[in-house]
Image (cartoon, rainbow, N blue to C red; front, side, top):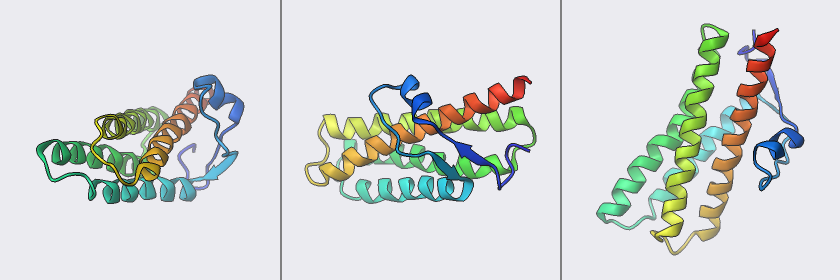
Length: 150
C-alpha cells in the first residue's frame, strides 16, 4: 500500500522546479519518519517564533492562526499512515498542502507588517520551510495520483 510506513517519497529537483522555479530543494530521498520529524520540527519552531510576537491583538491572533495551521501540517501528515484508501490518502495530502500554504501566508504577514524585529533569519527560514513542505506534498500528491491511474 502506498501509505505503508516503509513507503519512501522520492522527490526530484526537476519536478519541484516545475512547480515553483524560485525554490530549489536539496532533498532527493526522505522516508516517512524523517518527514514526520521535519513536520513536527516545523510546528515546534513556529511555536517558538510565536512566543516572540508582540502581546497585542494582532500578535495573538496571528500567532493563533499560525500555530494552528503549522500544527495541522504535522498532525495531518501523521494521519496519512491511517488512510483507508488511496483516495483518502490523497485527500489527506490536499489538507496538508492547504495548511502548509496557509502557514506560509501567516509567516509572510509577520514579516511584512512587521510583527517581529528580532529573529528575522528564523522567520525567513520558516517561510522557506513552509514553501518546501508545500512543494514536497504537492509532488507527493501528484505522484500518488499518477500511480493511481494505472
